[in-house]
Length: 455
Image (tube, rainbow, N blue to C red; front, side, top):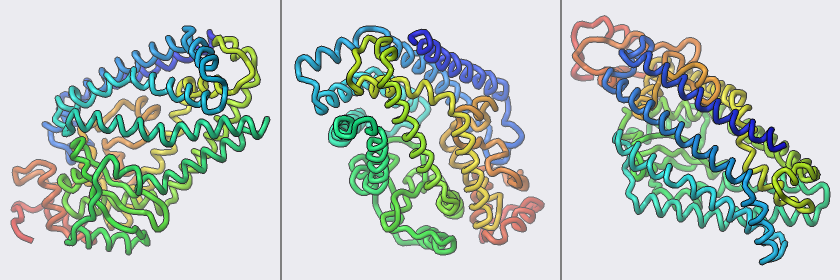
């Protein structure tokens, strides 16, 4: 058993290393010039910055993956876990609360091993490329808040699972699955109300043309939201996003303040149309169904290995309690699920294409949607042209290299004149073209010898 686990951990590490090296080679091979499909959506300076950023993140990620693998192997194959478990049980007893406390402490200690990498990523890597906007005090306070939340929510949930083992006999895993799934669904509703405001400030989108445009989009698509709010994403980073959170009457649209700064109003409308596409295509319920199925299989697997004496003995634990099986499953879960990443990410990319198509249909044009989504990726400075193998295996969203919106999408027609960058040209297009007439407008500007100055 130990040989199998060692092989799986090393195989995952080797696969991650291979994918990163493959992507680095791919990025370097295309670093000399902006690839053809991207020339109309990203200027050379930004593209070269994205290449440097991608290579730096990849190298850093390789070191982090290596460190995480070393820590995992050290924890699994030393006597630290079984010795600590026996010592803790002898000192404090073997009640559900005590066993949950041991599991919680192990999780906290292991998370501490990754803090130096989190710190370096924020204050070295992100700082180097101009993305970091947070302070060291804010960074530390966010982690303290996260720890307190885990203590307030995670620890009681662990105790409940262990209590269900005592109360429900061999069927405990079904009840635990239902309890954890119910907790997850409850958090979907409560997190936007109670938890997220602990980390970020949310304010209503001010009255004005942008709010009217987005509300009209919601009305046109049958998407109702309680409110449109702006999140102070700039408190932490210059990266941007848009999303809707919550269910039913608690659903609200959230725009990062950085996104509002980066995009023109028609572009923001196109990005929100993409997010509404996820709702209209029922992607959220489908992902929740995936979560439910994954949890079901996971708890069934824990219940099965908890009855296998050879599994306990392989890691130095005595039989008779389920908590070591929960602990080992938590440590090894990522090693197993890693190999199913291509399937899940394939499904996720399909959702992205569907949302793109919905947005294009809603907005009445393909180009503005593709342009807007490309601008979001442009501002993120993530490499928009990853190696195909990396995209298929690890990326849950499509890249921006001409296939961002699936079949039928094209950014052709952006005028190469006026002495403007691609971003400025796109701003002119969205400011001077009515959405419903966008295709015709592009053709007119594309063949025009003069640049418009007024609408």
